[in-house]
Length: 440
Ligand code: GLA
Image (tube, rainbow, N blue to C red; front, side, top):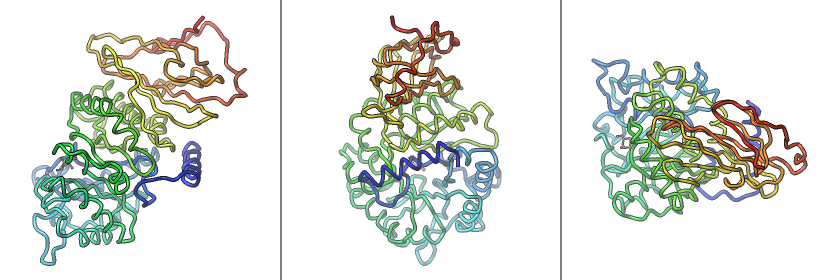
């Protein structure tokens, strides 16, 4: 295990023992789940006859399992292989049991889950609280206990329960009830809910204290699509509603801004870096929906950026916030470990939403970002892999942010005794991407 992971888990254990973690008490998802999810990229392609490589099938999930393990994704933390809609037969069997599509999943779901487990990964499945899934396959209503038992018997580790063809008002009891049935099986399954988003669409005010108590993660907003406009709309939604959304996140219970679309058709390289950085600030589940067989190396590198994954997986589980927004420049910030006295460390993302085709300079002191630790912060750039040493709160940092791009820094609070270690070297001869000037 990498040392940062060991460290992170030690802190999780301490946090769990010392503090009361309120939330779904299944002990799962103490950091946001990471994995691969079929929907955004592969949709409801059931045409295995004409498109055998891309249809929703046993083969697709086994292939992605192999790649997760063989190409470094699992080592970076990606763990779940998640099936989405369009996996079952259109009808239940004579006993009312869900049946995987007989042609596309010829060996059944237990066999697929066993394969995923044999590679050291975990297996997720999709269902819907209503009469039908969003794509029209059978939903769980009327079969809650039976379907939970079926998932248990297949070795499912993660259930996404959608909310199409259901009454939003019924969800306040329906989602907790299905969660209860999952728990009754005795198998630990991460529970992903779409409960709030359907209620918000219906004009209802979701009961977030109940949602936190019953779900490990939940969707608040629209489905992500393969475009920068879609990613921007999600970023804006989370920024504009942060006072309601942010307090609900924590170990075991996460807001889900939807899948990562990095490596697909719709995002540029800069935009992909922005999605990954902001998802990390949001403490979002990192569920890649991309064809891992054909992804280009530069996008793979974004998805496997360990330093940004470490921010996402920070054991404190505090979701970050948009702390500045003016003329197309945004600053997002998230408290992370280590904490020294009253001072947290931070991940800080500078986003350029402008469309003028030249990078924008952003200059700000650490103090203006709320970083007041008199002992200073060790600052590093998480994409450029540049370590700027220990900086005092009055140090002005200057970043160049590309159009629709991001600069993400990590500022680790220093212990008080390191105060004298703040370098006084001048001038700061750093690269073009990031220049520092010491405030006089
Ligand atoms: C809804 C969900 C998506 C996906 C589809 C499947 O739209 O929000 O994430 O699961 O259903 O039909």
